[in-house]
Length: 538
Image (cartoon, rainbow, N blue to C red; front, side, top):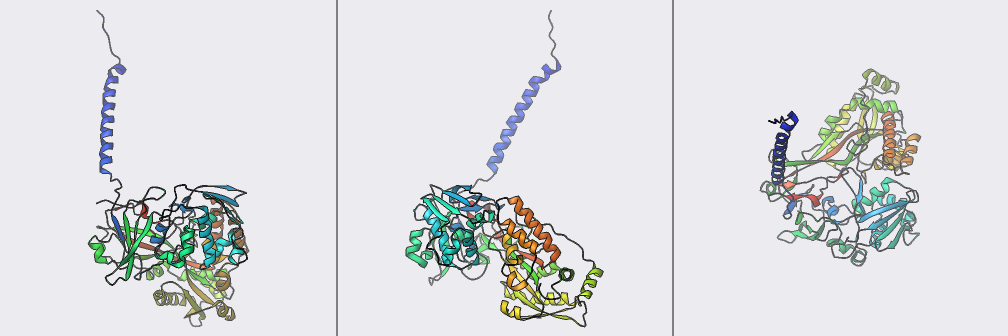
């Protein structure tokens, strides 16, 4: 009689197979269940948004000062920025870099059309950029012109076109830069660099922007009006011919006249977080950082503020978090800032030295400079440059009371000019709110701390040869990491020199209905919504 004996491996094999098969079936069932429960984007629906501010803004020129929410969804640039400020394709499908970065050739998308059905051409791109240089309405336009070959000559009226903007054919444009640099692409990704159709703009002139045509994910539909036919808002419709995936939303309406009760009744989906009546348990809150930075500058050319140790010592008397609270509302919250570059710019993340002030050392420094005497204070003129003038009394009162202990007597001045400040030998401090044109450290550090930058050149007179050298160095190169290192080195110098005290930056808050999905702020410190990816789940 033959007997067969199974080894343990033989006995367990079928069992393992059965168990694994069961696990696989169960796993597939769970995946299917999750897929069923995970909401998928649903096309359709209308979104109503109340923007910040109480007055209507009807400026639809990308080179103007309209609602970023509207303008950045009406128009499209050659390139765009992702959430981490990486350069991504826009109307340009791809590009090539040659001549050591000074020549960039852009290849436009073949399926890129304006809202009127006209194909986007390289000639439209050239026209749109040259139009900025003809407007001359913002200093940043000159900065862009000065970086392109022939741009300054065109700006000054010495040339009929910009020689560095060359149309190769309908879909190919070459840009010749004076210096290579990452910031060159940031200019092209800015909202003001949205591309316009040359023909309609030239024929209609200013009337073009009554019913503008762009190439963005949404197109102008009509103006919202009240019963008396007064314009109270704007309606955008989905661009069905958008060159990539079209938006989920059918339409977007924007009006500052939408009311809080409209939000509570589900008739409005997005509104500034104006009151704590908007329950965080019921509604979603979107918070975004703003490139709205506040500093206290010194007259660095006049004693005693010509001494870095004195400027450094004065920060021991200011409680920045309390000051930030004075400037805060529920919708516009201020965050104390200990670095010259804001901490939210992706990739830069400056490190704060974070030294605790040594009070005895601070008092010694002030005594050596003839300060610190409450009974014999130094009179210091105080100037303000802020967008919200209503904040001035409270901030001035705080600074006056805090710096009294340092032997300073602040006197509020209502106006100023560079010429007047140059004639006056009185030391002064300057509370400045700075909003850079582009989300890049260069547009914070250069104007505020380079010896030739405005407003530093005319108002603060800070001079440091090494800072100038480093800021010049970073302009000429395409290495992101190299620029980061340069900016960090500049940050360390500024921390030591203290030409100004960084105070706080702004954060804005929006409330939105819980059924809105994928609502996100655009990158770079501007709370403008990326409406292309939003959808309604109800």
